[in-house]
Each structure stands twice: as structure tokens, then as C-alpha cells.
Image (cartoon, rainbow, N blue to C red; front, side, top):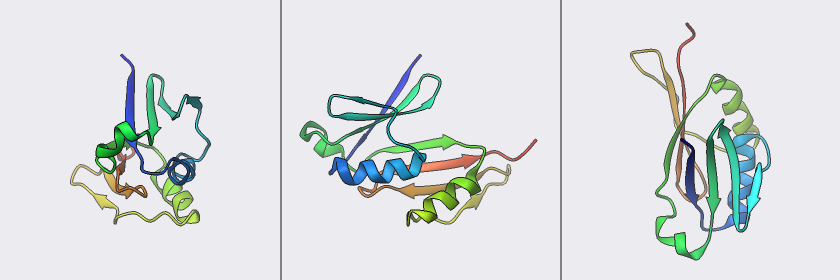
Length: 114
């Protein structure tokens, strides 16, 4: 199964720059008016600012499982991207919410080392 998660944006250029900082690279593909970042073998985040998506801007919630949370947060800070406080759950998972310029929530979760 493949996954394409669409993040609706109000301004593609503003969001493009933000997502490039978030992922640490430019979009992996551009298809028509959509920018795509591959985030797993068969998983993609799609950035779309077309008018047909306007009612959904700011409503996306995605959680990414990561192994390098501190490195990602340092990269985001270097680009002036703020985040909520990092929480540590009772099972040791560290979790943080990061909001894009439209208020879409991109959470990062790191499981404890085994």
C-alpha cells in the first residue's frame, strides 16, 4: 500500500521554503502544481495550494516516527522554526508538535533506544 498525505497550503512559495527546512531538502518530485517529499519507501507528503483545497488549509495532522529528534529540532531552530515543548511519555517516547505557517501540525516522535 502507498500513502500520499496532502498538506493544504495557502501560499505554495512560503510553504515550500518551510517544508524544505523541515525535511532538510527540496521536494523530491514536482507533479503539476504539487510538491512531493518521499518520507518512506511508499509514503509521500504532498504540498498543494490549489484553490480546490482552500477549505482544508490548516487542518492536516501528521506524525513522523524519527530516530534523530534532537538533530531535526536543531535544524529547525537554525531556520527559525519554533516548536512546542518536547514531551516524554511514560513509555519513553519523546514527542513534539511543529506547526507550519498555515497551522498544519507535523509531529515528530522518537521511540527510546532499545
